[in-house]
Image 1 (cartoon, rainbow, N blue to C red):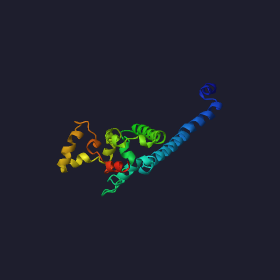
Image 2 (tube, rainbow, N blue to C red):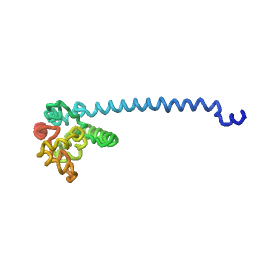
Image 3 (tube, helix red, strand yellow):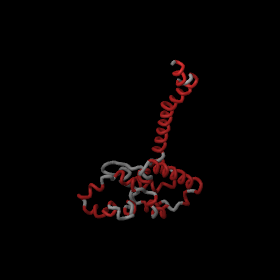
Image 4 (cartoon, rainbow, N blue to C red):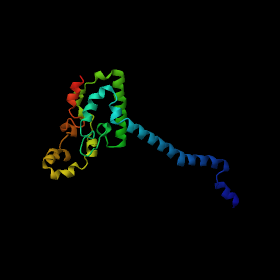
Length: 190
């Protein structure tokens, strides 16, 4: 009987490596993933705020216009939107990270390789639907639809949007949202 049981027990030389692998999987891997997640979160938070995004000279007009807007905290509620709140999609973490890296690399490339003078900011304002995301607007204005019965004019203006009868985005109608009088600041800096 003892001989049969020994056939099913693992040899002693296999137990130590198995314990090392088990400890690595249960302790070390989650620890490394947690540290990586925290470091990534820290890096994203510090490279998507207004100070970082407007640190390049070419962003001076956007920074000035942003500081004058209610989204910079100049509202009665003091709520402040960061650049990433509007300029990065919020549908999923994957779309956020993908757009973050595209924007970071693309903006750095233009700023340091081509030079900021090649960017026609006035022309880019006409293409704002491609770099301002409705998910950012709806993240803060999530209760917009519930407020409409009290504001019939606002409901009429947004009805086709919420019924998905239009392809318009928030910035199609709200052209200067986030950057008050941006055209004036762009003209001033040219």
